[in-house]
Length: 130
Image (spheres, helix red, strand yellow):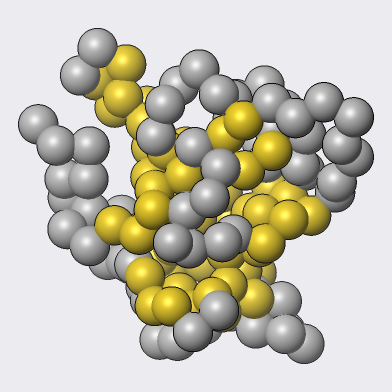
């Protein structure tokens, strides 16, 4: 099993500080509505752990912002390895991934790791595709 199956086109990012509360994923190019679901997935012993967050696209900027305090602040941590993060329309299927654009890079699925950073206080951080 590959970590990115069924994410056939995964874009790795710089590590995200665990102290961040929000993660700006970029702008959606092909959303049918302003209502989306952000999925995150990692694996424990080959079994997927998946969460879903309902969000409205920021109407002024068009950006999708993920809440890193849901389901709990400790959920997104440096110990779970690679998290896959993708977005779908609210009315779509789980793997009907929408294209996100951040810093001129298009992606349907981000590969994100988290790192503990001491003496850093950030509320929202931008995803930085590699």
